[in-house]
Length: 268
Image 1 (cartoon, rainbow, N blue to C red):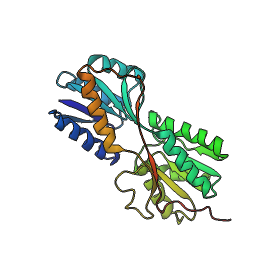
Image 2: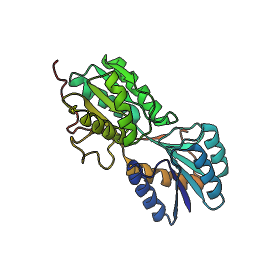
Image 3: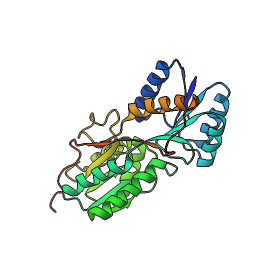
Image 4: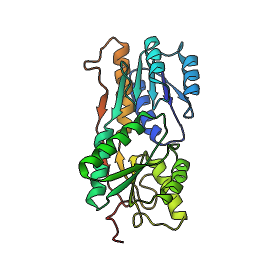
C-alpha cells in the first residue's frame, strides 16, 4: 500500500495526478491510500502519522509541511515529493521556469509591458518558483511585473484577488493556477470587464475546465498524469534499494497552450 497525500481534493489539478499515481501503483500490485489535507500542514502530519505503520511508501503532492518535517518523514518511510524540491528527499516537479518564461514571452509579443502575478498560497514551493521565474523572465524581456497578496489556489481565491487588480490595473495577468485564473475572469466579467479585450489572462496547469470557460483559458500545460506515474515508479524503485544518481529533482517539461483569453494589447 502507498499513501498519496493531496492538498485539496476539489482542485481538478490533482485528479490527473491521482489517476497517474493509481495506475502506476496498480501496475506494480499496490493499493493507493488517498489522504486529503485541506491545505493544512497540521492535517497533513496527522494523516501521515495515522498511515505510517500501514503503508510501504509515501507520495506527497504540493505538501504544506516544512522541509525539515518532510525530511524527518523520509527517514521513516520511502518518500517522494511532487511539485516541490526538498533537499535530500526525492522529488518530481514540472519545469516552472520554462512554462512561466513562455507565458511571459507570449504576453510580451502581444504588446503587454506590465504583468500582474496572481499569487497562490504563501506556503507553496511552486508559487515561489513561479514568481521568481517571472521576475527573471521580465528582467530579460524588459517587462514590468507586480505580485498580489497570497491567496487560496481556488476559484474563490481568484475572485478575491480581482479586487486588488482593480486597484492596480495591468493589461495582462499570469495566475498561480487555472482555478485562480477562472475565478479572476468570472469576477471581472461580473464587474463589466471583458477578457481579453481589457486584460489578457494566463493560467497554469491546463487542468480540467481550462478550455470550458468563456473565453477558453490560455495556460501553461503541466504533465499532471506523468507527475503521478513518475512519482510512484520512482518511489517503488527507491523502496527496492535504488539510489538517485544526481540528487536533483526529476523535472518534467511544460508547454504553453494558447487559447482565447489572451490577445494583443488594446491601444488606449
